Image (cartoon, rainbow, N blue to C red; front, side):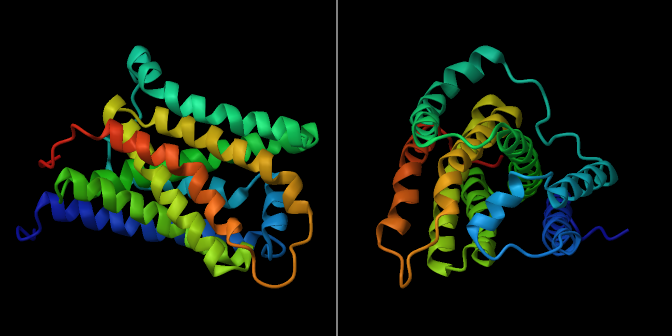
Length: 260
């Protein structure tokens, strides 16, 4: 037995290995299961609205196997205090209302598409929260102080979204989405810390993605203008998530930078 490896280092290695395996399963193997790789955001949304995202299901199966293999019991799949959760979730719920109202004003997709979008956003939210707020955050917080663990988890969560460049075809737009995801990741981490459960972040993550996909469904069907995108295409996603960032900082205002 190698006594030079401390439990915190061991947990960190396990978390890093899990992230790599999850990415390989969800992206490389998952892409091989699809007939064609989406070449635009319209094709990506079309795929999510016409069938089950089996690459996400595969990622969830991988997470379940890893969790059982490493015997993790502290990932946060416990029932939160309902009163605490509602007290903390009122503002995120409030920010969702204009998004769903805008989706209704623009025009909702067909019922079948709405059903698939709801299922797939639930699967994505469960998979990403299990990976980042569950496995990655627990691994980092076992090795780092609390604030670095919070920030690094949000950064890694956002960085993964840069891979959407393969669907968007625009690195600047994918980077903007990654920055926006990092901001939202801080709120998801704050909800985890304040409720002690993964379920509030999972639920908010699901409804946030679902609302945004409903809003962008019709717009994604329209051809993109030729030439570089206007500045608004990069700034609008950041503006939308600003309330998430400010509320996250509010929730984390009393979090001490102590060992987790």
